[in-house]
Each structure stands twice: as C-alpha cells, then as structure tokens.
Image 1 (cartoon, rainbow, N blue to C red):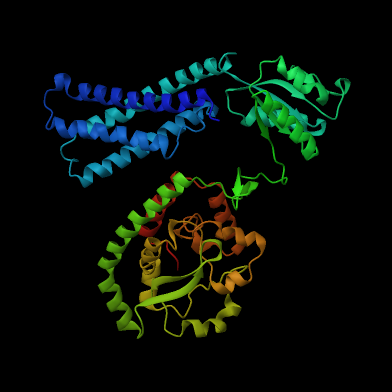
Image 2 (image 1 turned 135 degrees about the vertical axis):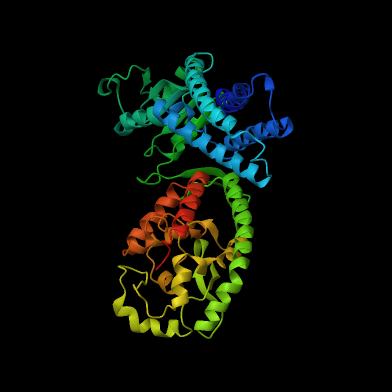
Length: 471
C-alpha cells in the first residue's frame, strides 16, 4: 500500500519543480527583456520554456530523481539540483540545436535561468522538507508501526529501520517473543514480551502496520500472528532473512498459477527504467548505424588494401544470462589471427581469463588506427539494435572465457552486455587484471541507474575523441 503522504510528496515535488522552472524562466525573461521589448520570436521563446517543463516531468517520473528527497541533507540536495539543472539545460540546448532555435533564443536568458532556477529550487526544496517533516510527524498522518523482533537482533533492527525507513513511519511499539522485560534496554518505546496477549494489547493501540523480523520464529507462529493482525485490519510485513548479504529485491506473487512464492531478485530492476534504457539503445543504435555508414567506405577500402579478407569480423560472444550471439566488428587483424593466437599465449599480459598482448603482431596497421578511435566497434550498433547488446553494460566474454567462469564471474552476465561500460572508461588499456574488470562490471550492475548510463556515454565520447581506445 502506498502511503498517502508519499503520494503527496511525489506529486507535490513535481508541481513544485514545475513552478520553480516556470517562475525562474519568466523572471529571466523579464530581466533580459524588461517589458518583453526586443524579443525576436516569442513563440520559440515559450516553446523552449515548455521543453524545460517536459524535461522536468520526465526526470521526475522516469528517472525518479526525488526518490530520496527526505534523506538528502543540504550538501546532497545542492549536488542533486546541480546535476538535475545541468542535464536539463544540456538536453534542451541539444533540442534547440536540432530545431535550429539556438540563434533565436537568447543565450543570456539561458544563463539567467540556470542561476535563478538553481537558487529558487534549492530554497523551495529546503522549505518543502520542513513542511513534509512536520506533516509526517503529526499523529494524524504518521504511520504507526509495531516491530516484532527477536532479542538478539532487536538493537540492530531498530538502528537499521531508523536509517532506512520511510520518514512517514513512527515506531509505536516493540514485541520481543523470546525475552522478558528485565533483559531489554529502555528504548523509550512501549514493548511486549507475551505473544499470547499481543493481539489483545494491539487492539487498544493506535496501530497501522506491523513489521515481523524474527528469522527463528516458526511458520505456524508467524501465521497465527499475521492472521490475528489481518482480522484487526492491520497491514503486516514479514521480513525475510535469506542470507547475510544485502538482497536487492523481493516480490510476493504466484508461480505456475497455484504456488504462492516470494521471489528474490539478485539485481534491482525497474521495468520502467529498463524500458527507457531499451529505447535509448534503439535511438543510439540507429544513430550509430548512420555513423558507421559514413565511415564504411573509408574503412572498407583501407582494410582491403592492406590485408586480403573480409571487411567484417564476427565472433560468438556470451550475452545476458548465457545467451550466445554473434558480435560484429570491422576487421582489425590478419585473416589467420585466431590460428596464431596459440603462439602468443605465453605473452598474455592479463591475469585471469582475458587475453591481451601489447603490440599484438596480428593487428594490421589499419587495425591499430581503427582500434585507437574505436572505429572497429561501429558495426556493434547492429547488435545493439537487435537487442543482443546495449549502449552501456558489461563486457561480453568469449566462449573460451565463459567455459572457465566461476559463480562469482557468472554474475557479470545478469545484465545485457554493452558497447561501453565502467571499465572501458576507467583506463582499459592500463588494466591487466581480469578481476579488476569484473570488479568494475559488478559495480556497474549493483549501482545501475539511467543517469549512470548517461554519464558513461558522455565519458565514452571523451575517451574516443582523445584516442584512448583499445591499443
């Protein structure tokens, strides 16, 4: 169930951000053009303002940038707004260039708008936090929670709830089934030790929800507790403790129609954000194919002149969750490169399952140029358009590498492999340890957001133009 206060927070912040943008936009307009005198094209001017509002809506509901709003202190709030403003102005500027509005819309208004919108949004957000805190702290609006927990983990549980619980919750009572009153510290919260009378005690309390975190409690006892609270119309949450490692997501549902199951997802996935990621891949794939077409005649001619053989190179790689696919590249090696690989095994500079040799003699002179500027990878935009790969992801292993994978390495394949990734922008030419590559890939999987993809793509462009591709 979604708390009413959370709904107010989400939609209230969206309306607040819209108001801040439009207010800053109008103020910047008046400062630049007092009395609206001297404006070249008012239609274009206000269309730009509308694009700012559209970006705000997308960023609020798809990128969900305010999901941790109440937990952000002043410095984090300022950094979040700076990031939001920078991306908004960059995106709208690209739109203006594409629509040829850049010469019509005043650049000075854009500068004024950036400073004003940042200052106004920061001020209003800090005021909104105080308003929401006051709203959540009221007995009428707060969600009263009872925590049922074993004595051995009660202190840790309460501390963790204090750090991570949504701000609209207030712990109203504690129930410890395996203790007595004398053995418990004073938490300043009413507590109960008699489970037989717990439902009777809860009947006379102001109580909205119950959180049960008792791994050693029998299923029958949990069932009786939940049934009793259900009869009282109280929402009950049962905490799972499947391992010591922080599990990302659980989902209660049905399997094969007749089984009720709690599903564990090792990777935090939002279908809404994954859909946006796929749309980004489709748009990026189409753009990349056009770029490849531009380079194709020059690359094809150079490859053929230096070394007889096909223009393209294909190889079976391992994709998401072990799926095989053909990866495509411009050929950068001599035709007998795979046969000669055995001769170079002793020179492998990588520790682990990857193969890498500096000044690999199998690479042609043209191939070195193609690799330096990552031109050899342009055909992979076909893989991206097909869905075998993504613009950003993990490195797809070869079949030989995959056959030697451990369980730890296998987790790299839980997301679609990418044309670029964290390890590619972190000095891939200087990394000589496969475990280091794995560390970057797992960091990407665990911390994945759409904004992280955008940052990696921007850094990839810088790396490519600097000529720091694979050597």
